[in-house]
Amino acid sequence: MHIIINNSSMIPIYEQITTFIKKEIAAGALPEDTPLPSVRKLAGDLKISALTVKKAYDRLEEEGFVTTVHGKGTFIASQNKPLVREMQCREIETELAAAVEKARNYGLTNEEIKELFSIIMEE
Image 1 (cartoon, one colour):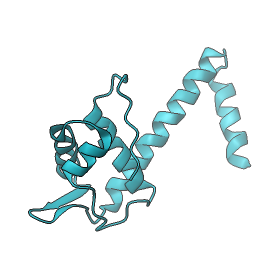
Image 2: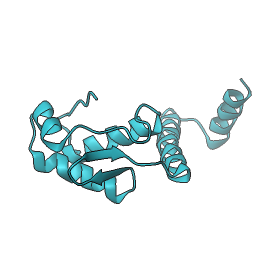
Image 3: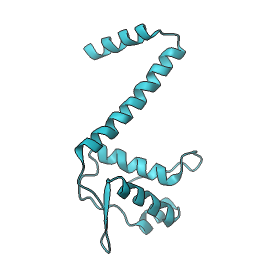
């Protein structure tokens, strides 16, 4: 697992880790029962505090993306399909909202934006 941390980002490091892992799960790159690196190992690889990694893993567990087995490690949980689907829809919604905002900044009307979207959907 190759996580790239942006230390100058306003997004906390634990959040960058959770976002990365969620995206990997949604993309199918981290299937069910895949072990995650130990807290110490990932902290060492990323050169960050183990507490930061622990916080990320705890958040992922709270949200149902991973499960931790005491003495064995943290594993990708069996995925709740609606949860993964909701996450994917939120990601697409964010990207579409950015595209609409860009179109409005270029002066396109809502009708022009809808027309472009219809054209794209037909392709």
